[in-house]
Amino acid sequence: MTRFPTITDEALAGLRALIGKEIRRPEPYLEVASRDAIRHWAHGIGDRNPFWARARLAPPTILFAMDRIVSGYVTGLPGIHAMYAGTDFRWRGAIREGDRLVGKSVLRDLEEKASSFARRALKQTYRTTFVDDTGAVVCEADSWCFRTERDTAREVKKYSAIEPHCYAADEIERIRLAYAAEEIRGAVTRFWEDVEVGAPLPEIVKGPLTVTSIIAFVQGWGSLYVRAHGLAFDLFERHPALSIPNEFGVPEPPERVHWDAPLARAVGVPAPYDYGPERVAWLGHLVTNWMGDAGILTRLSVEVRRHNLLGDTTWCRGRVARTALVDGRGEVTLELHAVNQRSETIARGLAVVVLPRRRTTA
Image (cartoon, rainbow, N blue to C red; front, top):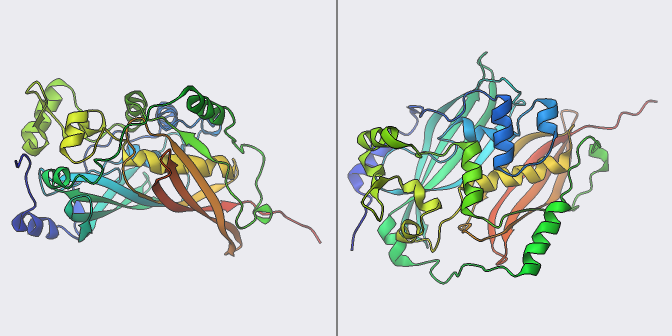
């Protein structure tokens, strides 16, 4: 039975016509990196590093909360599901307490891809440029989503064999101990000359994923379509395809796949799952823990793979892939990946960090 819209050639042509054009900016959750906003974002991704409050700097991935498009908001193809799949951030400067940033986005590309999840899928890519009040570019980011037909994804049943993980006491104890042992480099400077290719980063754990932890993330991030009362009905009036009746016949947005099991199953996923930007931010957290207070994160490019389901635990890991002197700066390239308790890779990518150099005198 067909419950949701399908991809039509007419709708696809209309979306292709927008390639290269600036997209109307949806209202952001945050416009200013206030002290409260920085704290809420750090807490939302589980980052306990006291450096952010002390230095009055924001974790670089706070940009997810300052623009909806870089977080997975898409235009066109009403009723066709959008699954966030990754972001490539390139920072040019730090985000400081009080900074007001505006994201300007352009639809870069629309590619049809073969998909084992839903047979037909479209990769929709945007480029968002963040500028401050002076017009200076603080960051440029490419983000992409896959658009899939919900009914087709449900019928393919790619993930139907996955069973929720139930934890034994010793498994929870292992996770607790990993949190207690989390290594934050902090004020102990990591010098470029001391970094060895192949060295692992101290891993961090995230999860097990719960509806509570998803709510904590949304408190810092802001969501795409979560609205209350009259604001929700205003949204559905403007965008009817966002109105999907729940089990009580009440309209709710498709975003509820992150906590509503029946809708998650209806789009082909066996259980509610996380927001993709969470995993990107978690790998960013891994990197900032490792680089220390004096390090500078200049690039974070992460591809989200598979689904991170309720009950899943994620282990964020990395290794030093390369070191180089670039214009006199000590750069380190890191390979990153996130693995769940089923040993499945659910995110992978890279980061580029600039570290202080040791100064020697003749």
